[in-house]
Structures are given as structure tokens and as C-alpha cells.
Length: 355
Image (cartoon, rainbow, N blue to C red):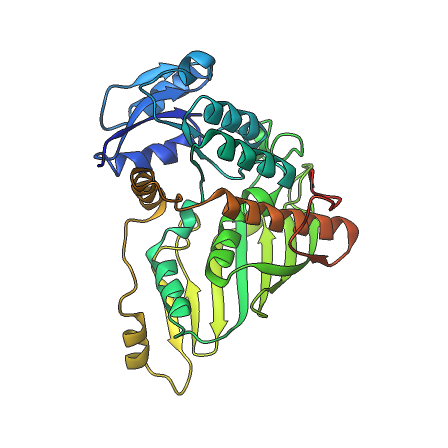
């Protein structure tokens, strides 16, 4: 039986995007609390909430976590605060949504997974960009076998970030942001890559600080050997004149390329080009039956509600967040050491407790 779930949004910055996702599902969710140390910012976000009776809180405290009328804690805090905030919410008996990156090391994500098992609660990491109808059509071609073997994939995160972006003091720091452009900016398109093509087998990477005087990288590149034998080439910069998030997948029977918005690169328009002797009629038939849903946060949250009601795994799992962090760990370890890094990474790897 379905019911409307009450949510406390912790952090009114990134939390604004989450509120849009909850607003898109008014029969499924009610934003009941917005919590932020800056009550003026919380109050400004409260104006965007379209349904229900809303409260503002200045502290993420035990009293809030103890409330029986809160079903979900939605964590939208800076990355260095995620691990503690997740653990407190799970142990308080709440289901949890948490922004990317989930935590700051493989050791932390394994510890969080142990708390999930201990408490029996559900934790859903946020990867809303994978929920787009363009990417869904690409997945349909691969999953049905119509695309054939994947040859090469390119993933481009070419964005622009300057001094105004880094005026927020925790950004660009290893201690608080935990990583740079690979972690904070390219993480979504790289999640799209692995959700489409599958696991990574080996990683070789380089990083550089070229654009801003910060501690973390703002340029980088990586070459991945995928488990299916295909190659993926990643390029990342925060110094581009224009902004592009683009995934291009060259397969045996078709080349697929996303042209969506920077923050919504899985959405349409996507371009699908059949490879001779295939033709457009063949491609149209191959694409028939591809699913069409809500997109972005709206779709991820809708699917989360369905999973909670059915008692099934959430649409993004802790294991998938771990795979994302494993790739990040391998990229940073390779860039630091010059080594080609094989995955998976076990607890005895030198970067297991942090990159």
C-alpha cells in the first residue's frame, strides 16, 4: 500500500534541487522540514516547497532525528560531513537519501554499508543524472543486443569554474571537498558511463591544477579498460570557455551521443547513428520499446518511493556508489603514483582508507 512520506532536507544549498524533485511527486512526498544553520537560506528555500506544512530548523540534532513523523532524512551537506550524518540518521531508524560523493573513501563506504545491514534501513545515494530518457534509449540498445559490441566511449566534462565558485571556503580543499574536478564535477557522467557499459577493469590517469589556485585538481584525463574489453577515455577541465557534458559511445552497429544540458546530459536530445549496412528503419525498430519516464531527481525519487513501498532495492544502491568511489580512488592513485591500477580495490590497497 502506497503512502506519502515526510522528508527532512538537511542543507538548503544543493537541497534546492532535491526540493524540485519532491515537488514533482506531490502524491509521494511531503517536505516537512528544511534544516540549515543559515535560517535565512532555509526560509528562502521554503518558498519553493509546494505542498504540506513546513518547519525550519537550524540544527541537525537528536530531537529532529527522534521525530516519529519524519520518514526520510535527505542529506545535502558538504561532502566531509556525509559519513557522520548518514550514520546518525540510519541509527535513528530513518531511511536516507544522500548527495554525491557519498563519503570520502572505500573504508567509509564499507563502514556505512555495515550500518545499513545492522539497522535494516535503506540508504539511496544520489545519481540523478543517470535518470534521463536519452540514456535510457542507449541502455535499451545495449541491453537488447542491438548496439552490438562496444568499441570506444568518450566522456567529456568541460566546464568553467573561477574565483567566484571557490569563494565558498570548503570548495577546492582536500579536507572538505575531498577531491577536485574528477570527484565533484565529472562524477555524474562517469556514473552514466559505468551504468551503461558496466564495470571498469583497469585505470590509468593524470591530474593537474591549471585553472585556479586551489588544492584539488581542475584538469585531468584517464583511460579505462572496461570489463567488456572496450576502452573509455575521460577528459575533465574547469577551464573551458563553454560548458559540455558529453558521452559518445561507438558500437558495432550504432554510434550514440548525448547532447543534453550540462547538468542533465542523460536527457534528450541524443543522437543515434546506424552503422552501414544498418539503416534508419532498423534503428527505429531497435529503439522501439525503450522506456520513457520522468527524468532527473523527479524520476530517482519516484523510483525510490516505489522501492520503499515494495521492499526492493533503491534505484541507486550503496554498491553502485562504492563502484563510483572505487573508480575515483583508482584515478587519484594512478595520477599520484603513475601506476596502472587494476580493479576491484580490496581493503589492503594503499588508497583504501582515502585517496
